[in-house]
Length: 194
Image (cartoon, rainbow, N blue to C red; front, side, top):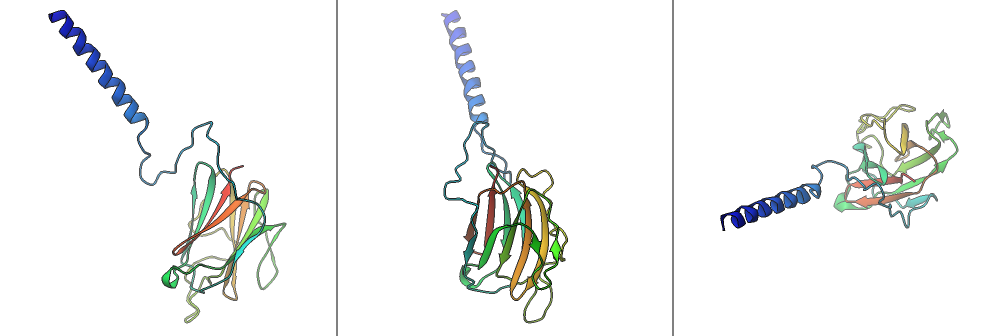
């Protein structure tokens, strides 16, 4: 009988160890971490495409911030534009052969295999005071946005803030499908990895 109790205890302990391993293998990623894809996971980019996308401007509030992030199937650029009541922000986004600065027409070199021109209906300054709300400089990388090591994004360049629009050049690996999402005060541009 004692022997049977020892065997049962060993089986229960072994089962507990297997359960603990299974739970830790499926635990959620740490807060703030980009979701990881399984090596064989397919990315659903149905409805995405490389054709130009646009939306009418509903509000011309100043641009506050631009930031980038990496995800399992795409790289993301987020524009923070406070709008009254979460109204949609106007935009025009599409691939171009070269980026030419609004107003002057000057060529701005953008690294990568393709250039996605992003125009957001939000000036980088306060129209009432002229004070800058976003510190972008023509032809320079976006302040605080480092895309080194990104799979799709290769370069970022500030174009101009002209007649209520802010122009950005996003260098990507090649002409890839992208989507545009609006969430309250954010305009989000996702470019697929493939």
